[in-house]
Image 1 (cartoon, helix red, strand yellow):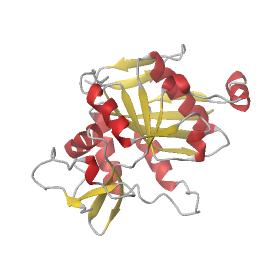
Image 2: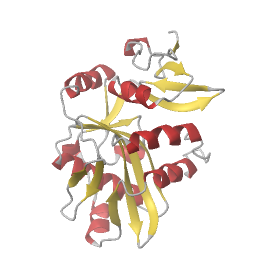
Image 3: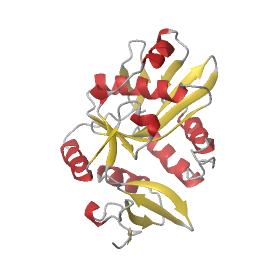
Length: 241
């Protein structure tokens, strides 16, 4: 299959997902323009890394997702919440969460350097527009875990997470999923399979089925603004000035 080069002058033009290679690679681009990012997520694609001046876009099959109602909370994590080991906030320090994700070692021991300065700049721009959101997990005044992603309609597209102490990223993810369920979200896009997310109930679905969710999602209202986490575990929307 050919790998398409996305045009520099049209941020809304994308190839059909059936054109992707077996590993999910479908296109490359010279930029991570925020409008291109919005269109890409709406079309089931996401940028994975940057190399030699190009950004590489993927749409894997199967697609790893989680339905909020199917969240699995194990006994060990219930004790984390019962003991109030952490404090949780939304959209309090988006850039710090991204930078921490970039510094987190992967399974192979390499650092998460795919989150380059260009990634940070583009996603922070989307955060300022009220479309990218972060979850912060705190112990006292220390940021010990978190995650970030994009929200469009009633789908949350997760990007990356980090933990500096045990269970911090899992606790943050669970907190987000429960709040999204209360807000009426139907799906969390986890992109690709990991044991970490699989233990929480995520599973692979055919890419074709994922695109059916995306088609329905076009008609849903996006919660644009700053998200705030309430004491009742609810997601509250703060309009952008």
